[in-house]
Amino acid sequence: DCGHEQEIHIDNVRSRYFECRICEETARDLPRKVYLLRITVDTVIQSITWLKLGYAKTVSTRIKQYGLPSDAIIERLKVMDFETGRQAHRFEASLHSKYKRKRLPIKKMEEFLTKSGANECYPLEMLDTLMKDLEAKEKRMNKQQEK
Image (cartoon, rainbow, N blue to C red):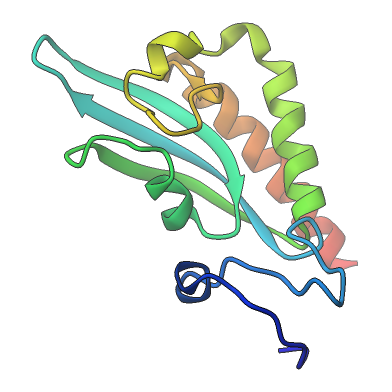
């Protein structure tokens, strides 16, 4: 959009996952989303369901980066828009810090999220707590927009 030119890998062009190096605009300057997912994976022994909290430009692209089994069931419970990646990251990181002791063990989650994201997973018991925090933030953001 800015008119500058640069070489970009074709996959990044298709997914619109790039930024201009000349303008020095980074992913942290552009709009991002904070999301809460419920993920279910059936194993030979059992079915396991957990919550995944994260932030991304495009949630569907981010989900592909997890390396989940192809038959995983993914439900988008909450997706919130932020004006910048800095705002989204700051909010997401504050929740991860607040609930650090509630997270699921990384080693266990790496069995299912084979590429990334294993350190941002929570048990289903955290659903109400996380939703309350997300909805409270959404209310504050809506109030600020009204001003």
